[in-house]
Image 1 (cartoon, rainbow, N blue to C red):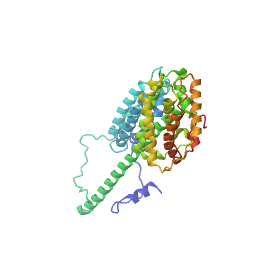
Image 2 (cartoon, rainbow, N blue to C red):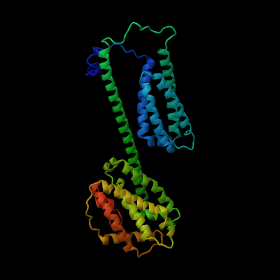
Image 3 (spheres, one colour):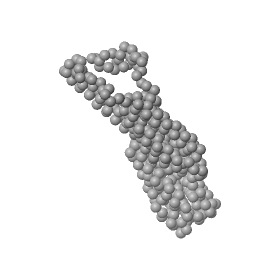
Image 4 (tube, rainbow, N blue to C red):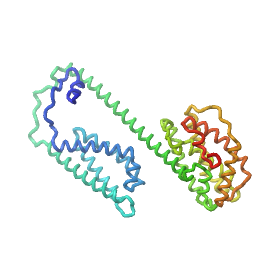
Length: 395
């Protein structure tokens, strides 16, 4: 079906039908402006959806929010560029090009490992800027009217079928206009929501991968604790754990505001909320029960440890409240949990960390509370206990 046929179907009953299309009235500058407008749409969506990848590729890792704002600007300038107000859109694009060049100039230094990418991007933006300027001048010149050439339409009423028929047609077209505006608003809201969900999902996965890397990919909290305290020194452990707290809090709030996140499941269990939640709860439990209280009191009583414990519990409780999890908890094998504690103590002691050997009962009691919540959530998200509990004595 041709575009001409579709146009004829979309017209109102009283409107003339399009039988065939004539030669295009678009000039070369108009076509260039239209191409630049669609380029703005593509670039804007890319900057909105994947600002992190663009920032990393250009060595502008701290400018992710700015790139997302530039994406919104590109989409805003695309609207007039694709309409009859092309000079307005092109002027906005030229101003945006200047901002892009200024931002890229900050990445053109030898200390930036991605400076070559930034140089290529600068050259491309400079070329696009020249096209924008050429299109702006061309459109202005094409549609400029010389003084004294105004057309006289005084003999036309503009109402070929009479005022009454035109009033009815106007009401119909107003209805179509309102409908279009509502549809555009809904589409904009849906796109914004999906972008926010994507950003939250990316941050959740980044947190999960960070925790997995800190366990050397084992998923064992004892390995993570041993790496946080090399040679038994706990000086930087609280600081490193504190770096995880903002991401954990953001992940918890994202699941509260965007319930759609609950339904994103990845085949690799390292990205499972129940997996990294289990690791964090096991980590703080080992800190409380396995470390020597006299030597490591500052770490045990630190705010990051308490925040990780509470934040992880809140996140798992949020998942438990929104998923059809079993109400009856599976019984915990106390012998396996005790073996896991003894294996963790042995690993920490081997790493030069001062430990206490009499914390097994306390560890078992705390893990009973944690495991009940974790293993209610894990099956509802499609993971088995073996994929979640990766402690050396149970894996």
